[in-house]
Image 1: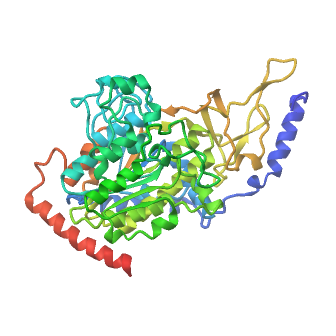
Image 2: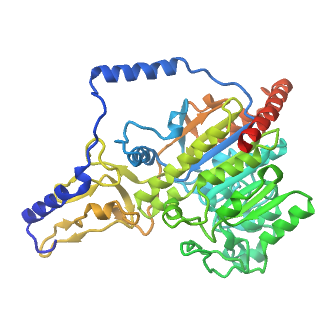
Image 3: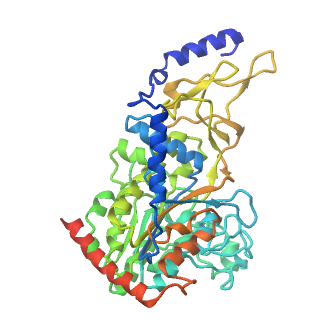
Amino acid sequence: MRGLTPALVVMLASLTVAASPFHAKRFRKKHLEDQSYWNQLAQRELARAMNLKNNYNVARNVILFLGDGMSIPTLTASRIYKGQLQGQGGEEGALSFETFPHVGLSKTYNVDKQVSDSASTATAYLTGVKTKYKTIGVDGSVVYKDCASVNDENKIYSIVKWAQEAGKRTGVVTSTRVTHATPAATYAHVADRDWECDGAISPEDKERCPHVLDIARQLVEEEPGMSINVVMGGGYQNFDAGADGTPTDPLDTQWGSCQRNDSRDLVRLWKEKKTDANVNWEFVRSRTALRNVDTKDTEFLLGLFANGHMPYEYEKRDNNLDVPTLAEMTETAIKLLSQEPKGFFMLVEGGRIDHAHHDTVAHRALDEAVAMDRAVEKAVQMTNQEDTLIVVTADHAHTMSISGYPSRGQEIIGLAAIGDDGLPYTTLMYANGPGYNYSVMPGTHQVMRPNITEDEVISWDYTQLAAVPKDSETHGGDDVAIYALGPMAHLFHSLHEQNYIAHAMAYASCIGTNLDHCSGSSTQAASISGIILSLLAALCWRY
């Protein structure tokens, strides 16, 4: 575009946009959306609201779905994206959990930051206590990176431990490393979220704080980690000092900076501990192996499907990888955990929504959100809302926005319109990140944006434009949504502090504190109904 006059730039940009196959796509409405249509639609919605009744049952099971970085704009864009994958306009549809009857908002700030990270937020919604930036499983008295500040008094325990103490099974499923911030908050206590393996802890800190184990060791060697029944995700290199970084498949390149150097093989130790405890266990590293797990005869399952983070869902599809989807991991976990009549607690994280946003690759972020939506659908199908509370939320927001007055049904990952500079821009953009890409016209002080085409913007690798240069896009400080279905779902009803989520889930399932409302008859009835539902579920899965 350099050396071209502004008028010629406008003309060329207009021709590019007009010729784009995206702009030839228009949403075709199947019916006339006149006043009668909208009035009838509103009346149906009003009737559903008037007929809504609160469910005061005890939640035998609780499933928390966490979309990492799943901001409200991400939800809106993903809803449209999902509809457009199905050949619809998209705006009129919904993600499965957006039809849940109860909705609230969560404030995501932490003890020392307006805009938080995934470690501090995970600590809040899993332990019920807000804490400092980048710390896990400890309260706000701990100093970031100071291992000596961690002690038994300031460690805080998650709802996973509360559920285990009540005799329930527990599970953690993620598309990230199982030692990453979100899953780690179910079992670990560290002053630095990056201490995923011993290689990330300095020699000085190891000598100063021998009582503080790395996150992977805490999962295998300490409670409540060693008693979690199902753990599935990536991060194999954090458990095996013998892992040399060789990918198990061409796309297994997400190794990260942490590798064991203490000669430990924690996977072998996990197997030995389970064998010594005389429990049935399975360790799997592929989708094929996962499908062969006998969930009726397995008490503990460890699945590590990648050396680092698991591949994106589109990579699994496009390359026919032997790696399970988030929905498939969720399905297997529910089957195994449901064998316990007292019920279970499970965390399922769609973790790579966040990673795609940090790279300002919106297409991947939306696809990961839709993948988590499929996992939620699977969980709803496999459980009963009379005894299972399902909560869907996010830990924090991102800086992606939806803008530009695009037409109804316009492709959400495509172009929005023409700017005043005569150049097209995308509907989805970021406030900061690696997508910053501007130049100055020769001989002037006029800033020029690149001329983008539709073929570029709809690819899996396209980096959205950003206003401020950053190697990695930052989180956003927005409130995030909470959706709930099942017993006590109405407890999520307004604007909440993020740490409230753990307390509400525990109250609903009669674990942890606040047990005054839990009569013996109600919990016994929940246990009996759980046995019946488990038997019925087993018959359904078998036949």
